[in-house]
Length: 60
Image (tube, rainbow, N blue to C red):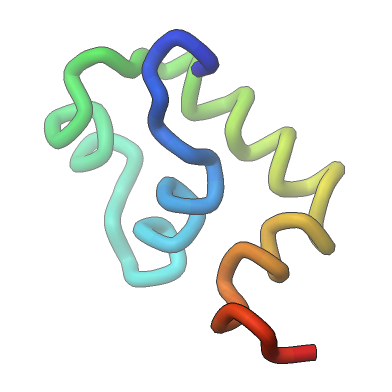
């Protein structure tokens, strides 16, 4: 994922909006299924970081 410059929070935002993994793979051809699985794991293990990325700047 690091080499793709695609932020994990962006993928999570898309998932929350109903975008499927198949659609993400189509939209981001540099990603593969392993990348998406790694992003899910990251979201699960770093929930506060992901939530902070969704919060407007300066909002507590």
